[in-house]
Length: 193
Image (tube, rainbow, N blue to C red):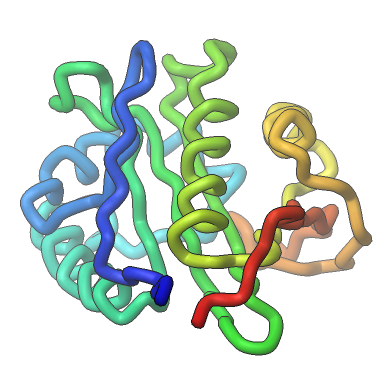
């Protein structure tokens, strides 16, 4: 009998990065990433409280994320350089729903200095494959702002198709922003028994 192992951690070594599940002791690495990219990510993310940019804030957040992972309700992955010392980006899966729709939402961010190298496209491919293969998701949803051409390209390259337009969909940097809605469907989905 095949069962989804919701406790299974992600670890993928690509040619120039590692994609893995964030652990509680990654708090400083993740804090450094968001501090370093604070102005770069500002236009694409919700406004953040100051705790988001502190090690103690991330230590607390990672405990909660670890619990969600253990329950199979959410997954927070980090992209690290090859020696696993520096965070280059993040990939997160939220809003997981199993029977009857088997769906979730993906979000991601990438270091300003890592843009244009194909890192996010490859990391997203590995991450979505994990959700399809090990978490038995049938559908992964993603949304991007119409002016975010890089995100549109990453999603298209990974098989996400446009499905709609959501007016004033997310509160980004203090403003309600329109988003293009996309999804990627697992064509090889099988029911988990």
